[in-house]
Amino acid sequence: MGNNQSHGGVVSGGVPEMQGGTNHSVLPVDNPPYPGPAHEYRIVAINAKLKMKMGFAAKMGDIMVSSDLSTYYETLQQQYAEYYKLFTFFQVPLQKSQNFTSAHVPFHGIMSRPKHFVPSPESWQLQIKNIQIQFSLFQTGHLFSYGHTVSLPPNVQGIYNTISGMAQTGAKLVCMECNGNTFSPGMGMGLQGGFIYGVDVFFDVPQHPNPTMYTYTAHSTPILIGRSYGNVQVQCDWTGTLNMYLNEGWKLIDVLIPNLESGEMENQQQRRGNSHMHNFGTQTEQTIWFFEKELSMVNDRAPKYQVTLVEYYIHAKVSGLTSVKTDFDLGQVLSDMGERGWTLVSVLDTPQTVVSGFGKATRGIILFFQRPLLANGPGSGQLFIQPQNQMVPGTQPVGQAGPAAFGNQGMMGAQSTVVPPGGMVPQPGPPMNANYNQPPPPYSGMPPQQPGMQPPVNTMGVPPPTGRISPNPPYPPQ
Image (cartoon, rainbow, N blue to C red; front, side, top):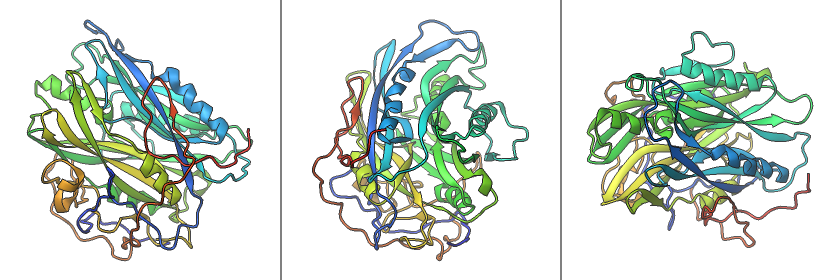
């Protein structure tokens, strides 16, 4: 399966193609078809209410924004009775409705299960742990892993303690997400270290005896953010980070940009007295990556998983004075990727933005999909599947807003290079190893519409996504 190493250089490609009538880049199609199981998805939509505290919060821990998100988690847990499991949970980018004292913010839980029932001795329940983190500062590089936890900074220590404690019981990390709760860091500390944010960490807890034990590692990769007249460009070594861990046998679990998801980036702009829509220059933030291995195979370096990225474009429009509406809808892309054996690992909201008019903008996000690496499957020598005629997400949008208007670079761009903390963008390095990152098979059109599509779960009056969801196979009741 290969042990070639990534050099983190430029990954070449052609003009990015858009799938006709969709908001995403072209999806990879296997030839021959992937022999592993297909997956179907269910989207659980939750509309959380955030309440802003009026007045001054002086003491550390004073609540500044409260969220009722956790009161709806039972809806996620109920899906396990139908053999669905949570794969990722996230706040829908940009979309919100607010006034001076409160806001309604949509969240989506992406549930998945094999399309056809396969009996298994394993049984799982969803459990959510809440922690509080001050996100503002993260070191670059390796954060923690099995047997390597010396001198962890406080914001990493809380994450490590939660994950390692649950892992010792046989629980598996699913993902983590800021829940909207915001706390004061204390008088004068907000200007130095930023606010304290509530984070929900999701685990699958085994209900079967003698569960397999897992271990986790975390890595921080810098992302360079450039702003000009409301437009935002990003550059990050997505492929280099993936290759580093996939080549060692790790499984990708989650990717996040803490200061973006928590709102700390926007709070920093406000504390500096600058409007983020008209700010110039660059800043460096951190992306945090989590990977998993079976504890008994921690020294096994044979690659076991493939990952591919899909660029997704959200068109946002200001509605009224304080609300933002979007066309965000993952139903179609989830159904199509599930048919190819891909499971959605992470929905990474990036700052990548192009303003297209008054109150209008296009936002670029990245969907991380993963599947087991099969010896007789398509691309069996590839760990990172780069779609043909599509750039690896990286940097440099050009032209006007809209997926097709980002020119030869694509909305996320062509380069994938390491950016030193606070440094300039380096010059392009050598190409990726040709034997490692081979072109995938040709693309084909999307599968035909299937009858009997199941509507997504909908809570709190959130309009359900319109994309198709695969029909239920004959699963037995639990």
